[in-house]
Structure formats: structure tokens, C-alpha cells
Amino acid sequence: MIDKMRSKAASWVAKILAFFLILSFAVWGIGDVVRGPVIGNVIAEVGNSEITRTDFSNQVRRLMSVMRRQFGENFDIREAKQLGLIEQTVNQLVNSRLLKLEGGTLGLTAGEDLIRETIFADQRFQKNNKKFNRIAFQRFLQQESLTEAGYVEILKNEITRQQITDTIRLSTSPPKVLLNSIYKFRNEKRIAEVVYIPNENISTIRNPSESNIFDFHKNNPNQFKTPEYRKLTAIFLDPVDLAKELTPPEARIKEEYDYRKEVRTKPERRSLEQVLFQDQDKAETFYNQVKTRNNFAKTAKGQFGSRYNKLGDLYKHDMMRNLGDAVFKLGPDGVTRPIKTALGWHVVHIKKIEPAKIPSFSDLKAEIKRDIALEMAVDDIIKLTGKLDDALAGGATLGEAAQKVSAKVLRISKVDPSGLNEKGKPIPGLPKSRFFLEKVFSTPPGETSNIEETKKGEFFVLKVETVFPPKIRPLNSVRNKILTMWKQKEIRSKTRKKAQNLKEKSKGLSGLSQLAKTEGYAFSKSKAFSRFNSPKTNIIPDSLTGPLFEAKLGEIILGASNKGYHVAMVKNIIPANLLNKDTKIKEIKKQMVDLIFADNVGQYLSSLKGSYPTKIDQKAITNAIADRL
Image (tube, rainbow, N blue to C red):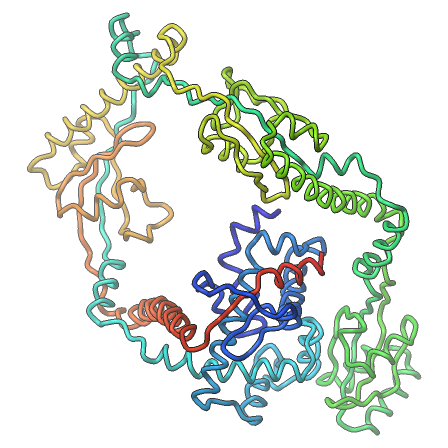
């Protein structure tokens, strides 16, 4: 799952962090921050201010809450660390603090009226009538584990910081000549005529002579080289394998079950509908009517349709406290007496009750046992690596060091960079870690590597005993391969000659249609296409698009494909439509402003680090993370 998420991280990490601070400057990094000793309960000092472990832990907790909603409850802090989210969280906190301090220096602030106006204007806290909805606001605070005062403080600081960044954005203006050039480049279109010449069938090509085979083997040595092979000795400590031999204490399993039971329990959920009144007497009248007629929806729609709405399936924590308490006391088909909130008087009907789902001990035992055993294995391996390191530092061989930590020695006689043996087959027992193989082929022969850790928490140390350089395979062992390659080369050569011949015959012609018909080749004419946006039905292969935009009107372009050759003529050049220019120029300008703005803010933050010296305590960060493991 990590690999899949890592490929997406660049796009959604900023969105996740933006839940808590509207602008996230994580992408600018903290590589240039001075690292030095900081007070233990402080993860960073920025100027004269401190970022505490509490600040960091709260931000990580909110991050984990969002990630678990995205990827499931099993997403843990290790995965967040592997994805780089922890470092980005530190980046965001540091950069946010830099802007806050600069805002104070500049005398910037946000008043209560502006904060209230900002909250009321936030579409997340509005309903269809575009009015502020406190239920939506409270639900948001619950989801993000925030108090109202905490969110107001975050918003206050963000508004102040945004005053600075808005100033930077307003000063960002790309030159008109640049925008015009990009517009013309993007929106120029072309139309081309295309003749397709297919390759002949391989069966029509005669077999090469022995002389041909010999020459092909001699003239293409790189096609027939073996890969480099290496002989190695290694110690590979895999916590997954070690965990299989460990049995966690039953008491610890039960303790973990008590924790996971709370996390994995799905609380009771109720399907609700309500009628909302602004007048208590009307609410009481409606309640009495419902109790008499015993049909909530029919009674509501008949007289109070404009105030009736389905709330859907809600948990108790989705509702305001007094409303939730009353609703969740009643049984199925129950109706609450009118309940007053800031929004008015609620009469709620319980349509259906979905009971809480509490996982049993037997449901979770195997999973918990496996996870605890893995944690125990990781702890054991970390201790073993210390002993291993001491042994190697004392001059022990890998075999001697392995005996001291009761580990197996892995001996591989020959392995290539893909993890295969000389016969092209996978090697039994070879670690599947790509990093391990990379280290095998980057370690000088005769040297022992450092103890390395993979992304999965495996540890290894290795020694490259021998390097077997690539060598050319004997002709007889690759004869069949040469036959196929030689014939394929002959086919491509014949097709290329046909394409070049057609190009010669097209000189002086205004089009390719008649020539294609005379020669017996398929002809087609494209629809208008641009460099970046072609119709789905367009017949121009991607390999020809670039060359066709470099060619002049009437010029012939040749392009090879796996199955033949394309001969294309630029038939028409359509300049960018200036009638739609203004709208599209605005889009281009926005993109350019965003790019330049990001660069300018990055430089601005770097300059602020000179005014507000920054220190990061990596040990405090590691300890804060360890507390969550």
C-alpha cells in the first residue's frame, strides 16, 4: 500500500495539510535549517519562539485522522513516516511559525469581526441557503479533533500570514510577451495527411547466411553481452521472519485488544428525519399531531414540508450534544419532544437503528498477535544490529559476526542486477528488497558495506566477494536470437526504403492521397490537433506530433512504429485563435503566477531564516513519534 500511496503523495499531501492551515509551505523543505541541540520538550526553535512536542503531536494527530479516513484505520505512523509526511509536517510548522513571527514584526493581525466573517463565509459550514450552519461547523471540529477556540486561533494566525503571502502574490506578474508566446505555442493547430506503410510478415524474409550471422554477432556485441554478476556474502535480518518465531504474552495481546476495540468499534448509527421550527408552540403542536397520527413523514410533508428534511444516517457525535443525547435515548420509530438549539426547535424521528459493531477478541486476536510479534521482532533486530556492528568493528568476518547474533549467512554465488542467476531464473532465498540489490552492485569488491536498513525495517550487511564483468555470449548460444533480430532488421530496412521512396515521389505534390492510392497504401487525413490536445480519433501517432510541429507547410515527415512506417505531410497550419485569447491568457497567467509565487515564497522563507534563526531537534521528533508507536 505504501508504494501506491507514495506515487500519489505529491498531489494530496499539501491538500491534507491545508485542512489545518490554509497555506502549506511543506514543499520548500528544511534542508538548510541549522540543526543543533534544543530543549527536550521542544522539537524546534524559530527565532525566540518554540514549537513544542504538543504542537507537533497535535498536528500529527490531525494528519493521521485525515489519512485514516482516506486509507483506512490500519494506516499507522510508520507509513506516514515512510511517505515523508512527518518531515513535511515539521516543515509546515516551521514555515508557518516564520510567517507568524514576521507578521508580528510587521504589526499585522486579524480582528474578531474578520474571523467571524471568515468562518461564516466558509462554504464547508453552510447549507443550501448559504447561511452559516453550526451543526456543520461542530461536525468539522469533531472530525479534525479541534476545539472552537483552537480553530479560531489557527484561523487568526493564518489570516495574518496570508496578508504577507497575498502581498507577494499581488507583486507577481509574468510579462505579457511571455504569456502571448505560451498562448500561441499551446494553441497552434495543424492538419496532416498520413500514409501508412506496414511491415512485411517475418516469414517472407529469407534466412541469413552464416556470414550474415557471424557479422551480426560481431557488429552488435552489446546485444549479446551477459549482465555483470556478483558473488556475495550477506547477513539479512527480516523482522517478518523473526516474528514467526515469537509468541507475544497473552496479557499484552489483551491490552492491545482493549485499545483496538475502542478504535475499531463502529458506534451505533441512526437513520433520522426532522422538522425544524422557530416557534416552540408550533413545534409542540406538530409533535402532538405526530404522536396521534403515528406517521412522521406524512404529517410533516402535509403541513410543514418546507421545514422537513432527512438527516440521513448519523452517529451521536455527529449531532449537537443535547440533540444527540435525546435522539439516542429513544428506541426505533421514536419521536423526540421539541429540543431547542441555536438553530431553533427540533422534532426528530428515529427511522432505523443500526447497532454498534464491537469486534470480539477472537476477531482481532490473530491480527494483534502478528503485529505485536512484529514489533517485538523489530526491537530484537535493533539490539542485534548493535551487537553485529560491534563485532564487525572488532574485525570479525561476516560468518563470525553472524554466529555472535545467531543469524544465518546468506551466500550467493552469482546474481545479476535483476536478482537472477546465470540461467535467468530467480535465486531462492535472495532478499526481495530492491535496495539490497542496489547495495550489492554499488559496494566495491572486497569491501563490507555498512549495516543498512530497508524501507520495510529489514537490516542487512554484505560483502562483495567477486565481480564477474559482462562478456559476449558465444555465437552458438544466441543463434536463434540472431536469426530473429536479423530478420526484424531486414524488415525495418525494407519498410524504411519504401517510406523514403514514397517521400521522393511526393516532391512537388500538394497532397498524398493520389500517390497512396497508386502505391496501394492506406491514406488518412487528420483532424486539427495541437501539441498537447489531440482528438481521441486522431490518426497521428505520438512520435510524429513533435516533428510535425517543427516542419514547414507541405514538408514530409517520416516516423517509424512497431508495425511499420508513417509518411506524413503538413497540410495546414492553423494559428492560435485570437478571439478566445483573453480567457485562455487568464488561465495561463494564473498558472504562471502560481509557479512564480511558489518560488518567491520559497525564497522569502529562506530569507526569514536569517532573521529568525531556526534549530530542529531531530531526537525530540523521533521521541515524539516513538510515543505514538
